[in-house]
Image (cartoon, rainbow, N blue to C red; front, side, top):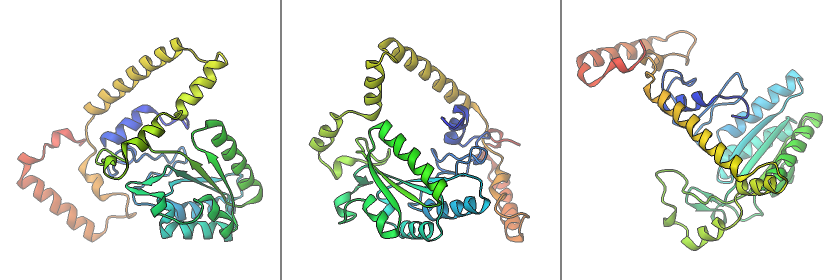
Length: 281
């Protein structure tokens, strides 16, 4: 949202409705915006790391005073794609920030089963990359580290690795039960530590920049805004089924044409199971 991506489009993507920029082809919470230079989120681990190196190399060749930033977890850093991305970015001297969020678990795999070295930041020197480890729960530490990394990436055409240390208190996803692989005591310990949002809130309150009244008002207004967008997205039609076959090739291939015809024959034969009035024409 800080880039200007509107709440309605967040909701449209989660509902995969006709307003979704991804045309209903992605899992929920896989946002992307070409206009805002935000590459669509992808589920397979570490696919974005070598892609980021390629994008940063293109930015370097255009000489446009820009950098690429790539976010991933410590679990993704165990994939081979991470090695390829790190190495390419260093040898090609790309303006790229690798931002690793180390929250202690790659779904159910704890860090002590992922690596024997000193975290992810320690890998930077091996690739010839500058690297830094920061308190990922401190918004100012993260901001300042990222700002300096960006400055150096652009000024010196080199990659920079940031490792932000945090802890995932919640489950990995709605289908995950973290009690199966970690203790309640461990979670309770971290739950008592200052959350990054509450830390920032206390900081602002102490300086008179925020108050309990501001908090209540903001929460009430935010909930209202979210629920309005939620209801609007829920009522919107789904994307036209024809979009299943577009955007992969410049022109429709014979094989895709055949699949498309097969789909519509199937839909016509079993139309009672396909409520096409819920889809855009």
